Picture 1 (cartoon, rainbow, N blue to C red):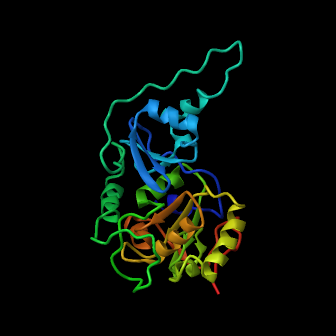
Picture 2 (cartoon, rainbow, N blue to C red; picture 1 turned 60 degrees about the vertical axis):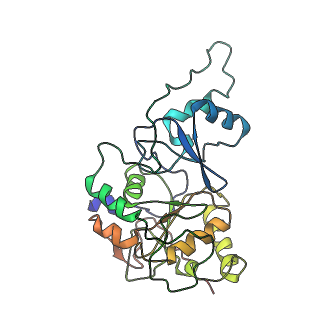
Length: 284
């Protein structure tokens, strides 16, 4: 557990989301214009690839996957893009992948041989507290029950985050709590949690900061967290990033409390990992 925790986010790492589980099945759901669409059969997905609606960076989910994942990282879907490429004259065209038949449930499920502790924790991190999701910045008390979804983004659990670590896949992690402890490798970004509007100075500064950080790549996976499922700070920060046009915004709702409940270690605030560049977002 400790070794796993110390591998997380060793500096800013930018690329694609990891494969969330080994087994996939169709039909698939996908994120379309910030909303969940589907279910879609493989034939329907192939048509969406042809039209450009489904790209390799589009988030998808099917039964057996622990969390939403970029389509290009799902083996069962990779043949969709291979099929659109013209093969050399001496090679036959690629065959489409075998179509599974398992039907999905309404919410992502864990893989069969998953970690029972993380599975149980994920249920707590996703629990409905009776608060409707909103696309407006929260201006009330920052400590209190939160929604279990976020428009235009995705809720990621401790299980999903640790799978990203295990697969050594890149992402950018932001601590918007500003406490005495933090997840290893997190970038301080307390200023991103401020209420206000998407036209205020904080938004403009965050736009410049993230643009420089991601080199303008709007599909960069961005993970925001604060204290727990009763903390709005990371929700606000996630909404700000979503409003700036970032398409892979992951709200780590469980935050530090869930991370520690899973048995993982935190580090003192300000302690950087080997190779990590000193960066932080401070709104003025």
